[in-house]
Length: 89
Image (cartoon, rainbow, N blue to C red; front, top):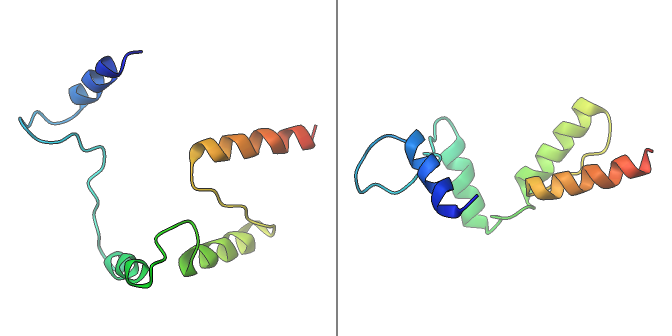
């Protein structure tokens, strides 16, 4: 599929506002989200590591009673799942 046809399909699904950029997601911050994002920016931890990533991993480990292996992209997830499926036969 050509990029132009993909863009046309996306534009078809969005509101008909002339001259506006194509926005697939408009962020909404409520509660403590803004505080958390600001803390990440202020401390320089805008990446795949940091305080909140560590807390998330520990929480997931508690829920699943196993080790947690986070990834930053869906492609990485797919690749890791493929590799793990090969190990488990």
